[in-house]
Image (cartoon, rainbow, N blue to C red):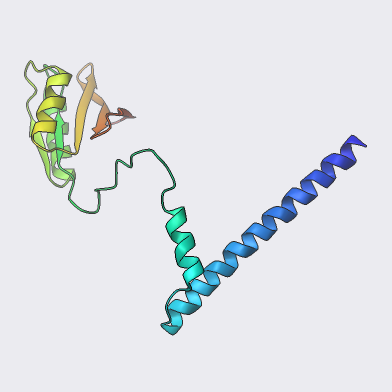
Length: 154
């Protein structure tokens, strides 16, 4: 009896999904036909689009990505080795609008404040282990979420 109820529940769920997908397909077909014929989009679909736009309350950190080019700061550790400096210079050539900065004795928080003051979009900290570049810390603005990319054979 339990298996039968489970199968029935799955069957009903799949049928409900098919109905939803069919409605979405019909809406897309109506929009496609209206655009091909040069007619205005039906009002019921325009109103529905306006309702669906605010999908999330979370800020989109890439909302301004298409409006302006990224400005990236590339920096190294406090006392970088020669291969690390060379790798940072090569990264500077790879990324458009990138600027390389010698870190000196600055702490990461000072670098972040400097980048915010000069309107940078990202910071890339090049990391090394025993004189060999082995990773990149990518810090996008305005939300500071660090991403670490491991590099091998750099």
